[in-house]
Image (cartoon, rainbow, N blue to C red; front, side):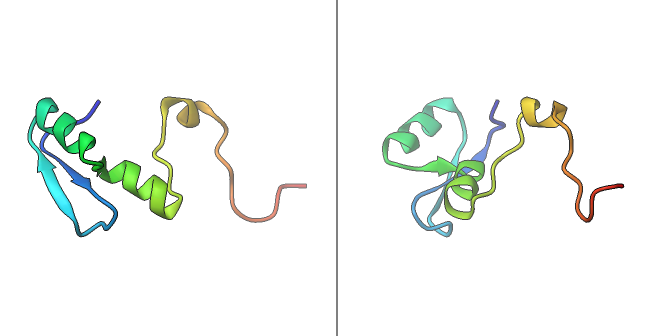
Length: 66
């Protein structure tokens, strides 16, 4: 679910528009805009957490226990 207003971006993160409702978001998506979380996932490899990931085991940093 998306909370409004939400920011959407084109190729450059600084190219930003604000979607104030679902219809405006649909118009901007047709022009190629994506939400911030989608932009991060696409351009920086950061993937938004999902319910499935939250239930999976957390990977811990460092050496595994003996």
